[in-house]
Length: 159
Image (tube, rainbow, N blue to C red; front, side):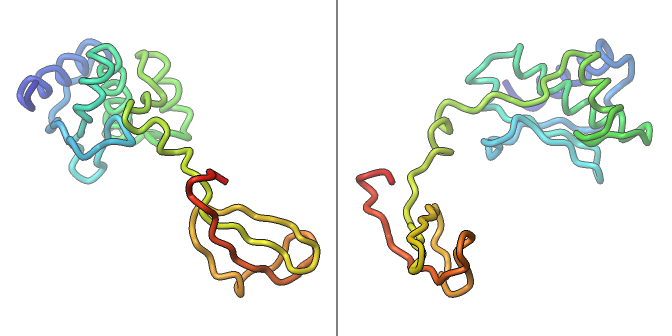
């Protein structure tokens, strides 16, 4: 599917579900991996992830389009268009859009990466696991306020 077909699809969904035209540009963006789509408040354009269409089909992609169109129409009407706003939540439920998109199959498992570092309190022995390296001189133990030692964990063990 190309951008021209996506543009027609978004315009059709906008008229059918919202009763209002979509007057801006909708395009695919293959760099979107962690999100299904995005709406730009300055330009009013919408980008959709083609990976969602490839992985989950047109039904899930249409829910993402409806989600982005909720942002679009509410922003144009100067109403609450952000995720936390009641107007957004109400409209999203009314049109049947998705609140969250499904994770892409190649991204599942990347969230649960192993801990690489361990901080150990010199005084009480409390352990803190970290994925990123931190400077132990900037922190103290949350239990006894003692000094911390940093250890690198073996990646093959997992923790």
